[in-house]
Amino acid sequence: MTRAETLLEIKKAEEEAEQIVREAQEKRKVIVAAARREAAQRMRESEEKLKAEFEIAVSREKNRIASQKEEILKRGREEAEKIKKLADERIPEIRLYLKNAFERAIDAATRTNG
Image 1 (cartoon, helix red, strand yellow):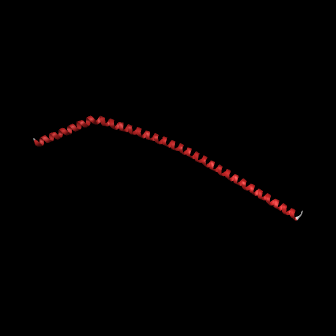
Image 2 (cartoon, helix red, strand yellow):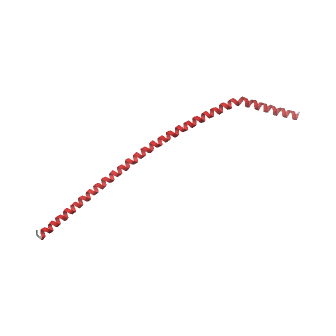
Image 3 (spheres, one colour):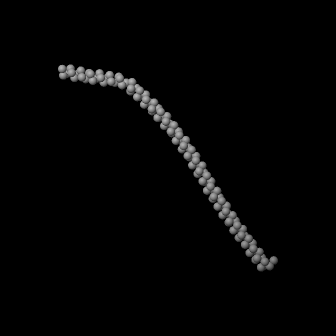
């Protein structure tokens, strides 16, 4: 092999090496871009899943709170009804007490004035 042939072989090998490097860089770019797209897609899916789970948890908690609220209101209404019933039952007794107290006051006033 002559010197010129050797130089041509070297030049050809360098060009092939450069071509291999360019192709590898292109493949790397394609792989990195695909990996980024996949990562972004996974992030979106994860965010959507978390959002859905969060909304379910919030909905369950709202339902639990609404149920507790209704139970508390029910007990409050029952207690208010008991108090009202007791008050209604005591009205005649209170009227009699007030009437007697008024009569005593009138009697006391007429004794001191009379």
